[in-house]
Image (cartoon, rainbow, N blue to C red; front, side):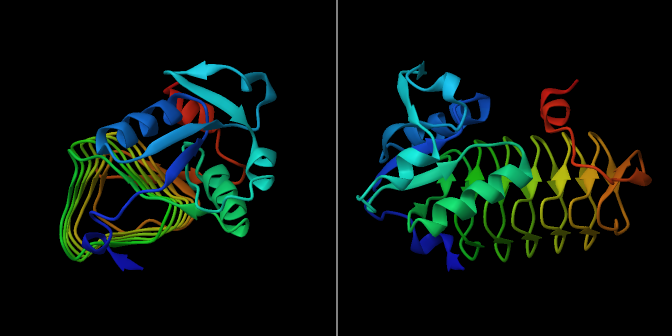
Length: 234
Protein backbone atom coordinates (compact mmCIF):
# COMPACT_ATOMS: atom_id res chain seq x y z
CA UNK A 1 0.00 0.00 0.00
CA UNK A 2 1.14 3.54 -0.74
CA UNK A 3 -0.15 6.88 0.38
CA UNK A 4 -2.43 8.53 -2.16
CA UNK A 5 -0.41 11.75 -1.85
CA UNK A 6 2.72 9.85 -2.93
CA UNK A 7 1.16 9.23 -6.36
CA UNK A 8 -0.06 12.74 -7.17
CA UNK A 9 1.92 14.56 -9.85
CA UNK A 10 3.79 11.54 -11.20
CA UNK A 11 4.28 11.34 -14.94
CA UNK A 12 1.51 9.15 -16.28
CA UNK A 13 1.92 6.30 -18.75
CA UNK A 14 -0.16 5.50 -21.81
CA UNK A 15 -3.22 3.54 -20.73
CA UNK A 16 -5.88 1.14 -21.95
CA UNK A 17 -9.28 0.48 -20.41
CA UNK A 18 -10.46 -3.13 -20.11
CA UNK A 19 -14.24 -3.13 -20.46
CA UNK A 20 -15.90 -1.46 -23.46
CA UNK A 21 -19.25 -0.83 -21.82
CA UNK A 22 -21.06 1.72 -19.66
CA UNK A 23 -18.53 1.36 -16.86
CA UNK A 24 -15.78 1.80 -19.43
CA UNK A 25 -17.29 5.11 -20.53
CA UNK A 26 -17.33 6.28 -16.91
CA UNK A 27 -13.67 5.40 -16.44
CA UNK A 28 -12.75 7.04 -19.76
CA UNK A 29 -14.29 10.31 -18.55
CA UNK A 30 -12.36 10.06 -15.28
CA UNK A 31 -9.07 9.63 -17.14
CA UNK A 32 -9.92 12.47 -19.51
CA UNK A 33 -10.78 14.72 -16.57
CA UNK A 34 -7.43 13.95 -14.97
CA UNK A 35 -5.86 15.34 -18.12
CA UNK A 36 -2.65 13.34 -17.97
CA UNK A 37 -3.49 9.94 -19.42
CA UNK A 38 -3.08 9.00 -23.06
CA UNK A 39 -5.88 6.47 -23.52
CA UNK A 40 -4.75 4.20 -26.35
CA UNK A 41 -8.00 2.25 -26.56
CA UNK A 42 -10.52 -0.09 -24.98
CA UNK A 43 -10.09 -3.83 -24.59
CA UNK A 44 -12.88 -6.35 -24.22
CA UNK A 45 -13.10 -10.14 -24.55
CA UNK A 46 -16.41 -9.76 -26.39
CA UNK A 47 -15.19 -10.13 -29.98
CA UNK A 48 -18.30 -8.43 -31.35
CA UNK A 49 -16.97 -5.15 -29.92
CA UNK A 50 -13.57 -5.37 -31.60
CA UNK A 51 -13.05 -2.68 -34.21
CA UNK A 52 -15.90 -0.54 -32.91
CA UNK A 53 -15.49 2.92 -31.42
CA UNK A 54 -16.80 4.00 -28.00
CA UNK A 55 -16.87 7.72 -27.20
CA UNK A 56 -14.19 8.34 -29.78
CA UNK A 57 -11.88 5.55 -28.59
CA UNK A 58 -11.33 2.33 -30.54
CA UNK A 59 -11.83 -1.17 -29.12
CA UNK A 60 -8.49 -2.78 -29.94
CA UNK A 61 -9.07 -6.39 -28.94
CA UNK A 62 -9.15 -8.48 -25.78
CA UNK A 63 -6.73 -10.03 -23.31
CA UNK A 64 -4.75 -11.51 -26.21
CA UNK A 65 -3.94 -7.98 -27.35
CA UNK A 66 -2.29 -7.32 -23.98
CA UNK A 67 -0.48 -10.66 -23.94
CA UNK A 68 1.10 -9.87 -27.27
CA UNK A 69 2.41 -6.48 -26.14
CA UNK A 70 6.15 -6.24 -25.52
CA UNK A 71 5.79 -2.66 -24.24
CA UNK A 72 5.30 -3.04 -20.51
CA UNK A 73 5.28 0.74 -20.03
CA UNK A 74 1.57 0.57 -20.78
CA UNK A 75 -0.82 0.93 -17.83
CA UNK A 76 -4.36 -0.43 -17.62
CA UNK A 77 -7.55 -0.03 -15.63
CA UNK A 78 -10.38 -2.56 -15.44
CA UNK A 79 -13.81 -1.00 -15.94
CA UNK A 80 -16.18 -3.85 -15.09
CA UNK A 81 -19.03 -3.60 -12.59
CA UNK A 82 -19.09 -7.35 -11.86
CA UNK A 83 -16.88 -7.59 -8.77
CA UNK A 84 -15.66 -11.14 -9.36
CA UNK A 85 -14.85 -10.50 -13.02
CA UNK A 86 -13.06 -7.24 -12.22
CA UNK A 87 -10.77 -8.92 -9.68
CA UNK A 88 -10.15 -11.93 -11.91
CA UNK A 89 -9.22 -9.83 -14.93
CA UNK A 90 -7.15 -7.48 -12.81
CA UNK A 91 -5.17 -10.49 -11.59
CA UNK A 92 -4.55 -11.67 -15.14
CA UNK A 93 -3.28 -8.24 -16.16
CA UNK A 94 -0.96 -8.02 -13.16
CA UNK A 95 0.40 -11.47 -14.03
CA UNK A 96 1.47 -10.04 -17.41
CA UNK A 97 3.59 -7.46 -15.61
CA UNK A 98 1.32 -4.57 -16.57
CA UNK A 99 0.60 -1.90 -13.98
CA UNK A 100 -2.99 -1.28 -12.97
CA UNK A 101 -3.53 2.42 -12.39
CA UNK A 102 -5.84 4.15 -9.92
CA UNK A 103 -8.43 6.25 -11.78
CA UNK A 104 -9.39 9.10 -9.45
CA UNK A 105 -11.63 11.88 -10.70
CA UNK A 106 -10.19 15.36 -9.93
CA UNK A 107 -13.58 16.34 -8.47
CA UNK A 108 -13.19 13.63 -5.81
CA UNK A 109 -11.63 14.46 -2.44
CA UNK A 110 -9.02 11.94 -1.33
CA UNK A 111 -7.40 13.20 1.83
CA UNK A 112 -3.80 12.85 2.91
CA UNK A 113 -3.31 9.66 4.85
CA UNK A 114 -5.50 7.58 2.54
CA UNK A 115 -3.68 4.50 1.24
CA UNK A 116 -4.59 2.38 -1.71
CA UNK A 117 -3.37 -0.53 -3.74
CA UNK A 118 -3.97 -0.55 -7.49
CA UNK A 119 -6.79 -0.82 -9.97
CA UNK A 120 -9.14 1.38 -7.95
CA UNK A 121 -11.75 3.75 -9.41
CA UNK A 122 -13.03 6.81 -7.52
CA UNK A 123 -15.80 8.83 -9.15
CA UNK A 124 -16.62 12.56 -9.15
CA UNK A 125 -17.86 14.00 -5.89
CA UNK A 126 -16.67 11.07 -3.82
CA UNK A 127 -14.93 11.81 -0.52
CA UNK A 128 -12.42 9.44 1.07
CA UNK A 129 -11.20 10.57 4.49
CA UNK A 130 -7.79 10.14 6.10
CA UNK A 131 -6.84 6.82 7.62
CA UNK A 132 -8.90 4.89 5.09
CA UNK A 133 -7.38 2.05 3.07
CA UNK A 134 -8.56 0.87 -0.33
CA UNK A 135 -7.00 -2.46 -1.24
CA UNK A 136 -7.11 -3.46 -4.95
CA UNK A 137 -9.83 -3.24 -7.62
CA UNK A 138 -12.22 -1.20 -5.45
CA UNK A 139 -14.89 1.12 -6.88
CA UNK A 140 -16.12 4.18 -4.98
CA UNK A 141 -18.87 5.64 -7.14
CA UNK A 142 -20.20 9.14 -7.67
CA UNK A 143 -20.93 11.16 -4.54
CA UNK A 144 -20.15 8.38 -2.05
CA UNK A 145 -18.43 9.33 1.21
CA UNK A 146 -16.05 7.06 3.09
CA UNK A 147 -15.21 8.44 6.52
CA UNK A 148 -12.00 8.07 8.51
CA UNK A 149 -10.17 4.79 9.16
CA UNK A 150 -12.34 2.59 6.98
CA UNK A 151 -11.06 -0.39 5.01
CA UNK A 152 -12.45 -1.42 1.64
CA UNK A 153 -11.12 -4.84 0.78
CA UNK A 154 -10.21 -6.09 -2.68
CA UNK A 155 -13.05 -6.01 -5.18
CA UNK A 156 -15.51 -4.12 -2.95
CA UNK A 157 -17.89 -1.74 -4.71
CA UNK A 158 -19.57 1.32 -3.22
CA UNK A 159 -22.57 2.57 -5.24
CA UNK A 160 -23.39 6.26 -5.78
CA UNK A 161 -24.54 8.20 -2.73
CA UNK A 162 -23.44 5.66 -0.11
CA UNK A 163 -22.27 7.16 3.20
CA UNK A 164 -20.16 5.37 5.76
CA UNK A 165 -19.28 6.43 9.27
CA UNK A 166 -15.73 5.94 10.54
CA UNK A 167 -13.97 2.61 11.12
CA UNK A 168 -16.21 0.65 8.73
CA UNK A 169 -14.87 -2.49 7.04
CA UNK A 170 -16.32 -3.60 3.71
CA UNK A 171 -15.28 -7.15 2.87
CA UNK A 172 -13.78 -8.57 -0.27
CA UNK A 173 -16.19 -8.52 -3.25
CA UNK A 174 -18.99 -6.94 -1.20
CA UNK A 175 -21.45 -4.58 -2.88
CA UNK A 176 -23.07 -1.62 -1.08
CA UNK A 177 -26.17 -0.45 -2.95
CA UNK A 178 -27.31 3.02 -3.95
CA UNK A 179 -27.67 5.48 -1.06
CA UNK A 180 -27.07 2.96 1.73
CA UNK A 181 -25.74 4.18 5.09
CA UNK A 182 -23.21 2.19 7.13
CA UNK A 183 -23.02 3.03 10.83
CA UNK A 184 -19.80 3.48 12.82
CA UNK A 185 -17.54 0.48 13.11
CA UNK A 186 -19.72 -2.02 11.24
CA UNK A 187 -18.23 -4.87 9.22
CA UNK A 188 -19.76 -6.07 5.97
CA UNK A 189 -18.80 -9.67 5.25
CA UNK A 190 -17.11 -10.98 2.13
CA UNK A 191 -19.39 -11.12 -0.90
CA UNK A 192 -22.36 -9.61 0.93
CA UNK A 193 -24.81 -7.40 -0.97
CA UNK A 194 -26.45 -4.47 0.82
CA UNK A 195 -29.58 -3.23 -0.90
CA UNK A 196 -30.28 0.34 -1.97
CA UNK A 197 -31.25 2.71 0.82
CA UNK A 198 -30.41 0.29 3.63
CA UNK A 199 -29.25 1.56 7.01
CA UNK A 200 -26.70 -0.89 8.43
CA UNK A 201 -26.18 -0.54 12.19
CA UNK A 202 -24.81 -4.02 12.98
CA UNK A 203 -22.25 -6.32 11.41
CA UNK A 204 -23.38 -8.44 8.46
CA UNK A 205 -21.96 -11.93 7.86
CA UNK A 206 -20.36 -13.06 4.60
CA UNK A 207 -22.38 -13.85 1.47
CA UNK A 208 -25.80 -12.60 2.46
CA UNK A 209 -28.33 -10.22 0.94
CA UNK A 210 -29.43 -7.56 3.42
CA UNK A 211 -31.67 -4.52 3.14
CA UNK A 212 -34.15 -2.40 5.06
CA UNK A 213 -34.08 0.23 7.80
CA UNK A 214 -32.45 -1.02 9.88
CA UNK A 215 -30.94 -3.58 7.55
CA UNK A 216 -31.63 -7.25 8.18
CA UNK A 217 -30.42 -10.41 6.50
CA UNK A 218 -32.92 -11.56 3.87
CA UNK A 219 -31.19 -14.69 2.64
CA UNK A 220 -27.88 -16.39 2.02
CA UNK A 221 -26.21 -15.89 -1.36
CA UNK A 222 -25.58 -19.40 -2.66
CA UNK A 223 -25.16 -18.69 -6.38
CA UNK A 224 -23.17 -16.08 -8.33
CA UNK A 225 -24.94 -12.70 -8.20
CA UNK A 226 -26.89 -11.49 -11.22
CA UNK A 227 -24.69 -8.48 -11.86
CA UNK A 228 -26.67 -7.38 -14.90
CA UNK A 229 -29.72 -7.00 -12.68
CA UNK A 230 -27.80 -5.48 -9.73
CA UNK A 231 -26.11 -2.83 -11.85
CA UNK A 232 -28.94 -2.31 -14.31
CA UNK A 233 -31.59 -1.82 -11.66
CA UNK A 234 -33.90 -4.49 -13.09
